[in-house]
Image (tube, rainbow, N blue to C red):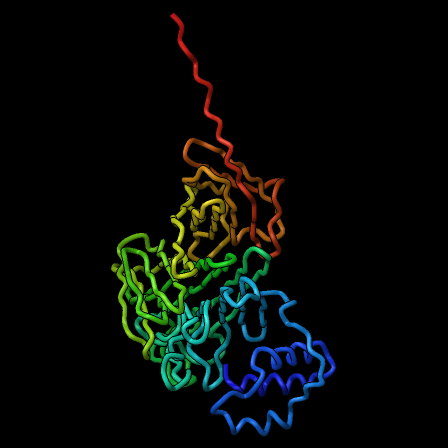
Length: 413
């Protein structure tokens, strides 16, 4: 933040007076950035002219910790208003302004202080240009054939979003952002993709699950598709896991899809770092499933496993946090269609588990059967009386582990 943010706040406090929004802006100006700071002497005159310490203030921390801006296609989700909170932002909307970044369907994660608080970063912040560079590889999105996104209408849109006390969920479509040889505001020659939808879930406080579906046009079925993650400091790679430390905290990313036959490479991005993930064997239809964990430098990411339904209609992640098993499932259909028929999947846990199934029929009821067995659970979900989905088609339920072995039969002489 700089004094320019203070200038905006004091103008809002003045221009919106006496509304509640004015009071929030006044509180921000009084407590978050109470002066113009050193080195910004040229900002002192507007501060003197526009500040009014007599305006009433109201603590904005009474507000919800998540917000969706429909016009911008942007959502922010905080785990709390505490200084050590995890903050996640996502954007997917038309790119029509000259200085907008090529960041459709991208996300960032913050925990800490200053620039070192960025765990998953927009890497253009790492250069002295202070964010002027807008290339796609500097953002946590996809590259197709190594090329950037285009400018113009239709480059991105949010399909749906959901904000609850436990999780925040958003789905974006940015397929039309990728064309061959885009120039200026032109579309380019030919579109690369039929499908690029990203489903992102922030499970409070520190988990972010990112599920990408990509379908290439038939004439581009062999081009490379790369998932890009930018970090503040140099990451380490061990198998399917990336770890990067920053500001006493760390980011861990575990790749569940592709499950094999992939390569991760690292590089420098204007002073920050990036990890590029891609399949070794090109495919016309691809899925990326990554689970990210943000915590303190001494914390560890719980064991996290891929879950694939035996009915082949959903896929997801099982985060095996002690005392808080979390299961998130998504439609396995390449286009994201609602799963048809029964949904059956198995878990290797002997604890209660919390389940979130995304992309089902909205405002419908599903019957859930939990079969407890030695060493795990089998979950069976079918249409019928039981649990109601949300207006966005999310089914939430708890599966209790209560396994009772069959009684032994003792033979007698």
